Every structure is written in C-alpha cells, then in structure tokens.
Image (cartoon, rainbow, N blue to C red; front, side, top):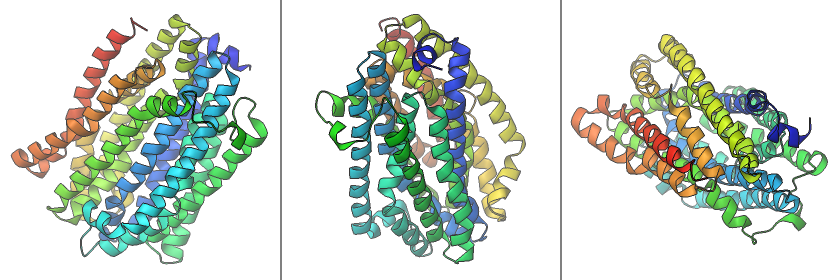
Length: 441
C-alpha cells in the first residue's frame, strides 16, 4: 500500500488500525521489557534488590525523556515534511534524531559515572540498597546512547509508515532482554547488575536492526552524516515539538524521586511495592499511549496536507478506541490485582502495599488515553506550549505539591492517590484546551 493512500485517503478506521496496532504491540513490548528487570530480580525473593531497581527507575525515565523528545519531535517533523512533499527535510529530521540521541546518551553515561554516589543518595538509596543500586547504575550508564536511540528510532520509523518494522525493532530488544535477564541475574548471580547488562545488550541489538532499516530499506528517511542538519528549523522543530513529551518524562523522573524519598520513610517495602506497581500499571497506560502515538504520523501528515476533516476524524476515532481499551484493561487489572503483584515477588509486606497502590493508580486508567491523544493533536498542529503545560501540570507543578500535601494530611494512604488525582485534572484541562484550539487550526 502506498504511503499517500494510507495517510491521506484510506478509511479512517482501517488507517488507524494499520498504524496503531503495531504501535500498541510495540508499547506492550516496551511494558514487558520494563517489567522484565523487576520480575526477574523479584525471583531472587530479595526485597532489597527489588527496592534498588525501583530507586534507579528515574534514570531510565530520564533516558526516555530524551528518547521521546527526539522520537516524537522527529516523527512529527518528518511526517509533516512528507505531507508537504519536502523529502529532504524528512531525511534531515531522521538524521538529526540519530546523532542527537547518541550525543545525549554519551553525556548521560559520563554524568552517571562521575556523579553516581550523590545521585543514588538523592534517589533515596540507603545503606541496605546502595550497593545493589550502584551495580545497576554502573551497567545501565554505558548503555545510555543505545537505549535512547533505539527508543527514538521506533517513533521515526513509524513516520515512514513502517509500524511493523518499528514493532520488530522493539521486540528484538525486549526478547533479548527477557532471554538474558535470568542468565545474568540468576545464572551468573549478578542480581540487579545483571538486569542492567541484559537491558543494554537488548538495546544494542535493537539499534543494529534500526541501522539496517535506515541504511537498506527506508526510501524517505536517512541517518547518513551528509543528511545531518541542525539549521533550517530542524533542531528547533524536533526539540520544540517533542518537548512536551520530554518534560513529561523529566518531571515523571523528578516526581518518582520525590515519591521514593517520601516512601522510604515508611521502609523499603513500600519502595519496592511502588516499583512493581509502576511497571504493572504501565500496561493500562501504554495500551492507550500506543494508540495515541501510533496515529501521530496520520495526524501530522493530514495537518501538513491541509486535510482538516480527516484530522478530526482520526482524533475522534482514536479517543473512542482509547476509552474502550482503558475500561477493559482497568477492569481486568482490578480483578487480578493481588495475583499481578504476586507474579513479581512472594513477600507479604510488598504484596500488602502493592495491592493498595495498584488500585489507587488504576483509578485514572479508563480515561488517561484522552490526555495522550489531545497532547499528540496539539503537538501535531504546532501547539507545543499548551501540550507542555499539560505535561508540567500532570507530573510536576500539580503532582509534587499534591504528594507532599497528601502525605501531611493522610500519610502513606494519601500519597498513593496523588497520581490519579492529578491525572483527572490533566485530562479535563486537555479536553478544554484542545476543543478551543482545534477550531483555530
């Protein structure tokens, strides 16, 4: 099928399905990938190692902040360029994403190695968890360039209409990680450090696949040095468009650090539990995020081509899909909430806290996809500022004060409801903002 037909004229439901299903699969693969480390470390039945992996979660979230900024921004710029028939600009965007990802990854690696001790102390590591957290951080640091580009590349490949290839790249990294986790964690007795090594190797393999795709298969995109370009609005276009997604992840990292600092006062069991809940709840969130991200090239292409009617049709159909899968996934998780926590570790204290936390985090599950679609619509139409504001509110300006307030008022039982409360505020605001903006676009 020609890209022009897929993006511009194929029936909306079929076009959304063709673009979104591979993206959803990729997102679920990412969920499995993120769960793998915690799951296999949990099989050691050592709560301290599980807590250590939870404490280092902000590092991975920061990696994803830049991966999402480059990936979402590059995808938006490339898809709009292709809609406008500017093929050279699309190549410039994809090449910029590749080299910017590796540069930022190298900076991250150096920073983690140089400032590991104060960073882990800031994250909430104590005398019991520090050694495990250090081992994980040491081995994840040199994987930073590969982790960032493999995630960013999957977004850019979807802009080429190649959702299946983006899915395959994600699956390569995930399958490798799942296979290698038990080898390094239990087989070699490396524990949390082994999980980091498996993660790094998996991402290197995914990068090799994407390298092959760009060099041998793609006709519209490039990673050739000659196509790398910062000027002509490439750097600003990619970074500004992707900034809302990046700030979302950065603030998620900050709020996770603060949440861990609050929880560690109640012991390492709540810290370990929240790490498991983060990973488990990702299934509900990433189902809808995959739908929203999958249709982003459709939104960008039709906006660039001036096809407003099709843009709105894609927007509305995707939201209906998000609502349906959100309700079904949340109901499923509620029924099996205790079983889900037990899959990770068989520790009575962690199961107790984990079940309570999972229920609290699931409250916004049915509707969170509306926020993701609205943010992608805003980004695809060049309205990066309101999308950024929504991200800042959800993960920073609103969530962080709410966490401190709920902790002061209701202690641990209050803290765990902070995310759901801010999610609902962000969803409502996104509906109001997009309903006003879409009539102007």
